[in-house]
Every structure is written in structure tokens, then in C-alpha cells.
Length: 86
Image (cartoon, rainbow, N blue to C red; front, side):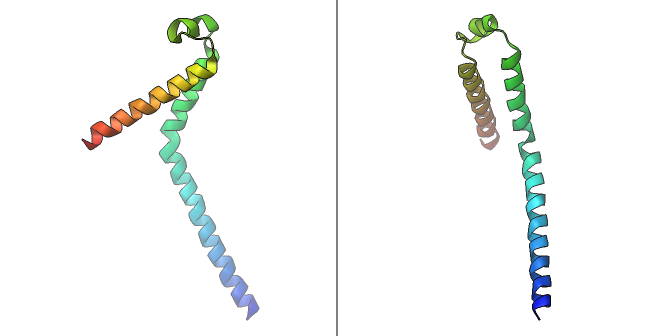
């Protein structure tokens, strides 16, 4: 009796766990372009020297430049979404 109940609970757990893994993989592939863009922005800022940052963005602070580029990416992304729905 208890053994059958434990088997059923274990099967339910495995099904839920497999569903969770599938959902995680799906979410990763949905977010992959955004993750790649984030990594590209981060790499660009880390490789840039201070004079280049000063010339292009008017500041030497890498955090401000990073925030600026992320906001620009999000605004561009939002603009594309608005054009697609219009």
C-alpha cells in the first residue's frame, strides 16, 4: 500500500522535474539573443580604453556607459516590438 503510494509520488515528481527542465531549456533558447547582446556589450566596454569611452560617451565611468548601452538596447528592442505590432 505505502510502496505503491511512494511509487506514484515518485512518478509524479519525475514528471514535474522533467517538465521543469524542459521549461528551463525553452526559456534559455528564448533568452539567448538577449544574453548574447548583454555579453557583447559587456565585452565591448571591458575592451575599450578610457579615452575611447570619454570620446564616444562623454564619461570615463564604465558603469554609466554600460547602463547607457543596456538602456539603448532595450529601447531599440521595444521599438522593434512596437513596429511589429503596429
